[in-house]
Amino acid sequence: MNETRKFSEGLLDDEIILKKLKITLGQTILDAGCGNGYMAKKFSALVGHTGKIYALDPDKVSISTLRKEVEKTNIVALVGDITKITEIKECSIDLVYLSTVFHIFSYSQIAGFEKEIKRISKPGAKLAIVNIKKENAPFGPPIEMRSSPEELRQKLSFIPGEVIEVNEHFYMQLFEKI
Ligand SMILES: C[S@@+](CC[C@H](N)C(=O)[O-])C[C@H]1O[C@@H](n2cnc3c(N)ncnc32)[C@H](O)[C@@H]1O
Image (cartoon, rainbow, N blue to C red; front, side, top):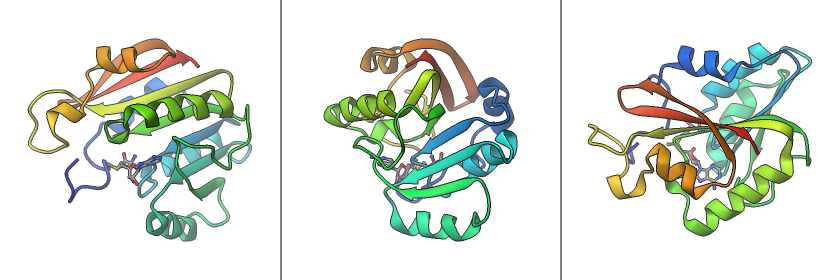
C-alpha cells in the first residue's frame, strides 16, 4: 500500500481467504486494522446472528463511518490500537485477521501485538496475517518494511500453519495456535 491506497479492497482474492479461514456460525472474529471494514462485513454474514465481529482501527474517521454503516448488525466498530490493550474482553476471540497492517509495526509494537492477541484469544484461536510479498510490485511499502513468510514466522512466537498465495502480490500466513 502507498499513501494513496488505504484499503486492500479489490486487490486480494477474498474467496480464497474466506475458504481458508473456515469461518463458522457463532464465532467471534477480530478484524484488526480493519480500515474501511470491508472484510469485517464479509465475516459478519458467515458468523450469523449468534456470532460477533470486532472491527478495530486507530483511525477515528474510518471507524466513525463504519459505525454508521453497521448499526444494528453483529459488527462492533472500535477505535483502538492492536499493539496495546484494547476494549476487547480476554479469552473472547476465535480468529484474528490482520490484513496489510503488519509492515507498519515497529519491533516494540510487534511485542505489544503478540501480548494483546494472547490476552484476547480463546484457547485454540487462529491468527491470519495477509502481507504484501517481499518483491517488486507496482504499489506498496518499501521492500525493507515488508516481511517474507519466513521472516514473519521468526518475528512471532505463534505456531505457524499454512501459507496461502492470495494473489500475485500477497500471501496469507495462518497461525494455528496462539
Ligand atoms: C493499508 S490499511 C489496511 C486496511 C484493511 N486491513 C485492508 O486490508 O483493507 C492499514 C490499516 O492499519 C491501521 N493501523 C495502523 N496501525 C495500527 C495499529 N497499531 N493497530 C490497529 N490498526 C492499525 C491503519 O489505520 C489502516 O487502516
